[in-house]
Length: 365
Image (cartoon, one colour):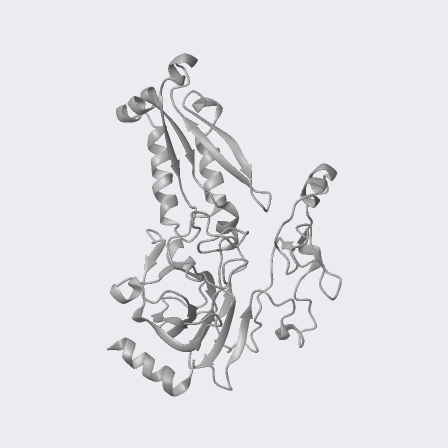
């Protein structure tokens, strides 16, 4: 019944993007119009992080075809825009896209320009309602599902409505009881506070009136939420985030000089963006080499699809168990060689893709 009501609203009002709708966030916009009055720079060049200057590394990068630009040229080192500035830039800190017009301005401030974040654009359509557009997987126009972003300037006990309007799947578990994930910085900082939690009301996933260029229609995830604190920072996500940095931190913790007799790591390959795709080998390395050579190998992999972050939590627990002092873990190390690739698609995880790598390909298809 709820889906039918929303579909009727779409038919009457289109996608809800009225003439009064205002873009208040765009992660790809080089200039924010909200800084024109302040005369401040949207990007502070003093906060820019330059790429490595090691000449050998630069030559290696130049010799490869990194598909970051529209023409597919060797542009990993930074193609230039019309103003002569690099497009692929990294900054130690970023200013918000939206600037409040006054202290009484209650407009939510959105941000997704962080590791694994995904939110392309936000339109304020009035009455605390926002239409959200996700980024497609890099190099594709067919994959959107993963979302991960932050809102700030919240107001306590105010009901907000979010509509993610460019989803692809024809059906979703959101219609069977799934709820979006939330992480409140203020709630988490309280004594005994919680981290991620599921919340939301009037949740509905349905086909909207927008047509896709390649045929078919887009779908909308609509939900309402009431925040618990004023001026909070709240993260929203499709599933519990687990970033490439989280994976690196885990491997650094597990692979130490004290644990070298049971776990060792190596770089399996470099990704298109130059990140390490690491593999760990777990066995009883105190055994004689000929004994190790006779052991059966077990290969475990995870995160070929970046949006399936739950797989990383399973892998996290598996690795911690395999290197533990548990009797079962010792038996496994004495009888098997485990070769584990915890994150097969680091680039996709980093940029907030749902299924693909930077090549625009689903790596297990």
